[in-house]
Image (cartoon, rainbow, N blue to C red; front, side, top):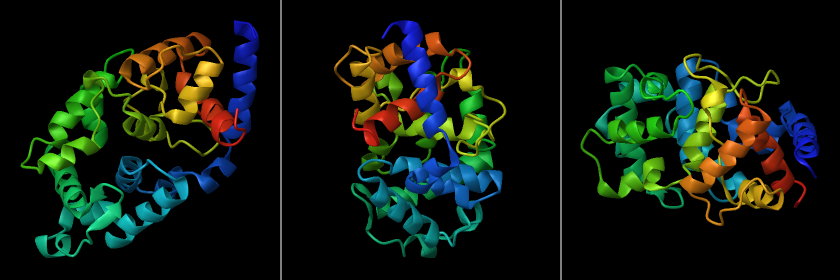
Length: 254
């Protein structure tokens, strides 16, 4: 395919997969249980944090997290006590355990009490063309309070060459308004043009087959290469192509 044909092909795949029925089998269904902005973003952030492995397990364990929080994540974040935290079971999701979850609750409380919430942190450090440096700054703020060393691995840092797939997916959910009801678009201080593709095994493999990506590793350098090529096709909403790449890889075995 030439460039025009590739864009036409991927645009069609975006329309095919960026539909409400996408929600049924995707972890994005978890924040869709809520209507309050803070609850959507907290549920989305916690779900994205454990979004590796089989999607069914991710969904089940994200529901377990929210059940523990009484399905009122913002209220729990702001008003929990130490006795409640000690009741968290050891196993949460793979290597994300009770120690990590307890700290995430405390850190999110700090962010909402002292930094005006998640959106404000990312917006403060956003750059015109990218949010990757903002993710780096977010990690510093997230761990500014006393924390277990082991928990730092659960927040990626693009400036340490991570593709930061899970946070980029979370940002897509919050920032991008797709007019179909899949992504939320509730963060108005940021633009879809600043977003980066959630690069994982599926999207990376498809991108390489379509010659949108040459680098073999799924790291920050590969993400920059992929972002550059996606922005050529749609500079205002490059991350819409995540639906096409993911759908081709997961649903079509492309």
